[in-house]
Amino acid sequence: MKFNPRMKKVLKWSCLLLFVVMTVGCTVPRDANNNIILITDKTTFSSIIADENWFSAIFVYPLSKMINYLAPKISVGGAIIAITILVNGIVALATYKSTIATQQMQLIQPELEKIQRKYEGRDDDSSKMRQAAEMQALYKKYDINPAGTMLVTLIQFPILMAMYMAVQRSEAVQTGAFLGMKMDSTPLVGIKSALAGDASGWMYLVLFIFMAICQFMSMKLPQILQKKKAEAEAAKHHRRPEVPENKSMKFMQIYMMAMILMFGLMWPSAMALYWAINSLVNIVKTLVVQKVIEKNDANQKGSRR
Image 1 (tube, helix red, strand yellow):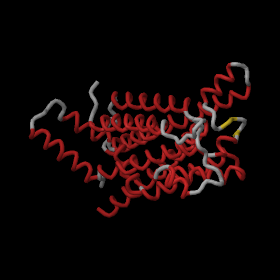
Image 2 (cartoon, rainbow, N blue to C red):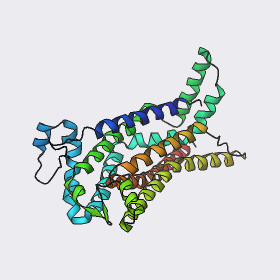
Image 3 (cartoon, one colour):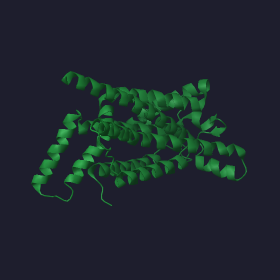
Image 4 (cartoon, rainbow, N blue to C red):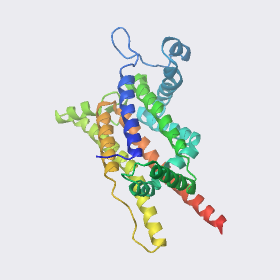
């Protein structure tokens, strides 16, 4: 199966994510008895920076402290939900332009693939230059900076890793429960207990399914918007919409979904909840950004008249 450059980038970054997950997962600080060193109300920033590293101090420590602070007030599950929304809001503000560019890049993917198919199998320098020129013209038409789209991805990785370590080290997560579920227990363990006759274990399955649905909808929404855009463009020119079947994209979506489901089963249930809420926030963010893009397009067309 041949992948286009965008799919190769996605595959590269997902492999990097898998490597980082495995690496970070093995470096969660532990004591002499191999128990995870928890971050409690008594843990200080200075002790973390002195005994561990800058990543734990700058990212993991504040997330764990916020969970510990909010958990007694709104439950540990509520704390994770609130922090997920807060962090996403901060990231959205910091990467506003990059987020819009990323979504625009997804919307014009069919047009990019059309150019790539046009020059497929033509490896001479002149064809490569013409392809690059056509792609650059397309980026200019929609005011997209391809390099800027990487910022969102680069910021999301350390946040994901920090949240993973924070829920493992938060005292509130290790000792608290949400809807009858122990947040430090994995969905896989909970599902096994349900199959063994423990009725409370079924909530873990409900959480896992909820996470899977949210993630699927988050991944599917850009395609729905792509199709809507293609139909709108086709209607303007009185022709049938061109939405080419992208086998490599489907493969990557299946690959990413399988990887996320695997992590969702093996990570603490607190992370499954985080991932579900994060996906819901991304759905809302995608819809809001789409409205911004449509408004900007309307303003640009109005200014040309």
